[in-house]
Image 1 (cartoon, helix red, strand yellow):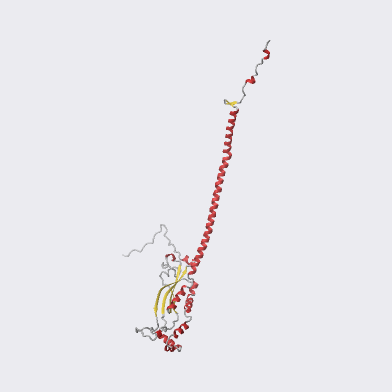
Image 2 (tube, rainbow, N blue to C red):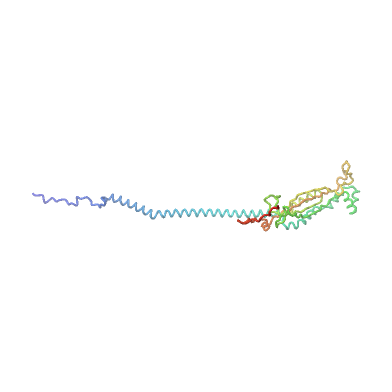
Length: 319
C-alpha cells in the first residue's frame, strides 16, 4: 500500500525566520529598534533642550540677575535716602547750634544800647546807697554825726576824708576808632574785621571787633558786681587791659593819724570811709561778619600776564 499520498511537504513559510527590516547591513530587530529609538529620543530631547529650553534658561538667569541688581539698587537707594534724611536732620541741628552760637555774639542793635545797658547796671549798684550811709553813720561818734547835720557840711566832710558810702559811677565810655593801617582797620570795605589771629586763625575774617574804653568808679563790692553784671549781658564781651587804682579822695581815716602805729579805735572801726577804686579797661564786642560782608573779604586773584606779553621796560639806571 502506497503511503506517498499521505506525505505532504512542509510549507516554506513555516520554516523561515521572521522577516525584520534591515539597512546598512543592520537588521532592525526589536531590541536594536528599541535602542535606536531610545538614542533618537535622546537626540531629539537634547536638540529640544538646546533649541528651546537652554535659551529660556539663560534668559531666565539674565532676568534673575537683573532682578537682583534692581533689588540691590533699591536697597542702596533706600539706604541713600535714609542717609540723606539723617544728613538733613544733622544739618538742621548744626544750623540750630550755629544760630545759638551766633546769638551769643554782639549785634549792631546791642551796640546801639550798650551804653544805656552799662549805665543801668551801674545804677542798680547804687540802690540802697542812702540806707548804707545812714547805717554806717549810726556807728560813728556824735561829733562825726554832727558833720552831717546839713548836706553842704556833710559833702565838705566827705571831700576831706572820703565818702562813707561811695556811689558807683561810669566815668568814661569812649568807642575806639582803629588807626589806619592796623590789623582791624584794613583796606577792605568791612571796618574792624579781625585779621590778626588774636582770636585764633580760624576766626580771621569771620568776626568784627568794636572796642570801647570804659572807666568805672566804686568800692570793691560794687566793682565786683559790675563785672558780674557785664558777664550776664546778652552780647559776648571781652574785657582786657584792666587797670585798678585806689582813690580815697583825701586818704585820712576819721580821727586816725596816718603815721600813727596805733590800731584804729574800736569806736571808729565801722565808721571809716569806703575805699574808692577807679577801674579802667577795654571792652571788645565781637560781632559776626554778615554774608554780604564775607563776600567783600574774599581776596581778588591777581591777573597773571598773558603768554607772550612784553613786560614794561624798567627805568634805566642813572649813569
